[in-house]
Each structure stands twice: as C-alpha cells, then as structure tokens.
Image (cartoon, rainbow, N blue to C red):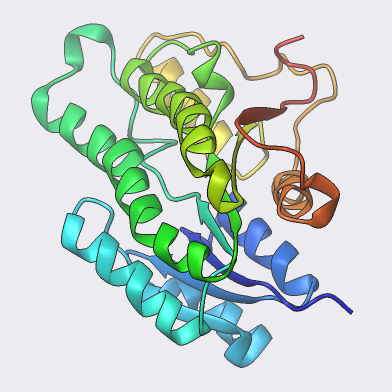
Length: 249
C-alpha cells in the first residue's frame, strides 16, 4: 500500500478546489485546506474528520502566505503536494479595458501571481525534506485564449504557464515536479453568473456554449490533479494540461 499523501490545497473547500480536496481524500490523503473564511471548510471537517485541517489563508498578505504553509506543514507532519488553486476569479472580476484601475490590477496580480509564488517558495523546503513532491498550479484556458472582459485575469493565468516551466527546471534536481492544469468551462454555477455579468456589460462570452463535450464538472479537474500527483505521472513536469472538453481544439 502506498503511503497516504500529505496535501495542501489553497481554496480547497469550494467549487473546483473542493473537488480536488475530495479526490485526494478518496485516496486516503490528509489535506490542509486554506480559505480566507475558514468556516466554509466546516462541511469537509464534518465529513472527513481529522483528515481535513482547516486553516486561514489570505493570499493578498505575504506574511500570511508563508505562515499558512508553515502551519500546514507542521500539522501535516510534512508535505508531499501543494495545489495552488485559490484565485480571484469568476463573477465580480470582469472589467472592460477602460474600467481597469490600479486597485483591480493589484488585487488580481497579488492573489493570482504573487500569492502563488510565495506559497510555492515556502513549501519547497518541506518538499525537499520529503525527498521530492509535486506542485500543481490551477491555470485556465484564458492563459491560451483570453475571453473578453478578463484581460488581467488572463494575464495572471498565463503567468502560471511560465511559472510551471521555470519552476519545473529549477526544482527537477530536487525531484519536485511542477504541473499546471487549465480548466475550460466547468459547471460550478459561477460560469453562468459570469456569462450574465458579461452580458450586462455588453460583452459576449467567448466560452459559454462553445465546448464540444459540453460543460465539464469540478470532479473532472479533481481527477486529473490527483492523477498528476500519482506515480503514474512521475515523468510529467513543466507542462500545462488542458482539461477543456475540446474548447481550444
């Protein structure tokens, strides 16, 4: 029997993050879940008990990023996997070109780029002590084909592709693999809200209704992430896996 993994998932209590957490827990892992509001982790704790460690995480605050990783590692007794899932995304983040301001740029880039890098830097010493491990960045199809009204968000996700390539090269000697996963149109309910928000702003969605396989489920992403962190993917690093139902085909 393989040793159960010790996993950290940022934003791991809702939507795609919840599906990722569930996928690891189904394999016997213990998961430290970081949320800005830890109370949303309560249903996971009720279902899985001590195998879920609820922690507060605010990616906009650099000190809290490092403190979160250190507390998670201490509570887990080490780390095998970090999934950088939390991000500013979905409804509320659309902006036309003329609406983009400094506060909006700071929020999106501080969470989606700086926060991811800081959490990754903080976890690497723990992965080295474990003899290796995996870092997963949750990207987006917007990294490859930005949709209207999501310029800054798309740029932040394109950064995940670059991070993945650079980090994979730097960390390969430590047996640390780095992979990004880029979801397409995933049915969390937020996609419909986003399409409506775009419509109200007079922007046509580039994604809604355009996927050959239809709308995906959060579990589709969770399953791919769990596989990429398994021995079956031990030669996969430095790449971005599209999980988009053929949208970009």
